[in-house]
Image (cartoon, rainbow, N blue to C red; front, side, top):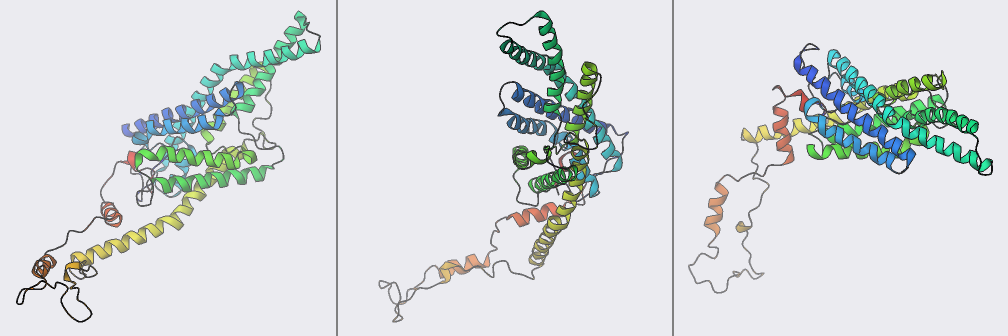
Amino acid sequence: MSSTFDDQSCSCSGITSSRNWHMATSELLGTFLLVSLGLSAAATAALSAPATAQLGSGLALVVALYVTMGASGGHINPAVSTAMFAVKRMSLADFLLYQTAQYTGGLLAAALVCCFFYPPLLDFETAKIASSAVAGNAGNITEAAANVASTFAAHSAAEQMEAIYVTHAHQSVSLWRALSSEVFATGSFILAVRGITDNRNAGPPLYLQPPMIAATVLALTLCTAPLSGCSLNPARDLPSRIVVAVFQLAVDGCTTGLFSLGGNSSFVAPLLGPYLGAAVGSWLYELCITRGLKASLAAANDQLQRESDGKIDPNDDLEDADDLKETRPNGDSDNLDSSEGQDPNPNAADSKRRRQQPRKRVATKDTELSLLESSEGKSRDVSVSLYNA
């Protein structure tokens, strides 16, 4: 979830390109880091520190972005790749390659984290059930009861894994409302990401972009998680569902509606919502922001061209304070000690000489942006321009 869009399409040679495969492995590694650290934070929150889940997910995003932004653009999210593909800044071959890498990284991360945290979750549930059994039997618990408690603990641990790793909508929220919430959240995320990473906009420097993007995710999670769970990233939710379903089949012989079309654990909203929201958000940025930025740059370039052709004097609107001669109301010179015949303004000649010399213009953001705009025709490294709008 991280990020760099460019006016020109990603010009890559195709799936067989060695560079494309390097970018794909970067996406796989970045998504693996994002999902593994994020799921671990969620599991840790369930076991010991509830307040760490959202903070841990945000920090995981920062780490994954710093690792991958230079190599592949730091998509690490199928929705971000969809946003680029929707505005024709990514080829179909690269889009499919990125999607495959992202889902593979998410699947490996989910499997690893579930294997790591299943024993602690099992012990946690066993202790909880045994404690309840002891309290209900006046401090005595038989061996048979302990075995039953262990069986229920395994079942409870599998259910707890679903609650931790899978995106759930609120039980009172309908499927269409959850889907709309995901579309809104992901669209807002893409708008923010493109604004943050657009080098023609007022975004931060490159090294500050990851924490700003993570802050956006944190804000959206706080705002929309109670409705739809705020997935934002299908590569985090779908692979986790697959891994949890395997654990549930191993323990109980059945799953608990992880792939149902309805209900609060439906996969429809977390999977389709980010794709739809990413396309809508990217189109809106193109329509409402990119066009305005291009118009501003065109106007700035036109003025610079006219000034370089001599049609506009950039010094016309500048006043030289040395040209102004202060006089008293009665017309006497301000300098009472000046002798007769002496130039009352000895700096006038120097001022005139300075005016005749060309002034050194101060570079502004517009002039810098015009230089960026003028270099659009040159080929640029796709790895550092994937998110620049």
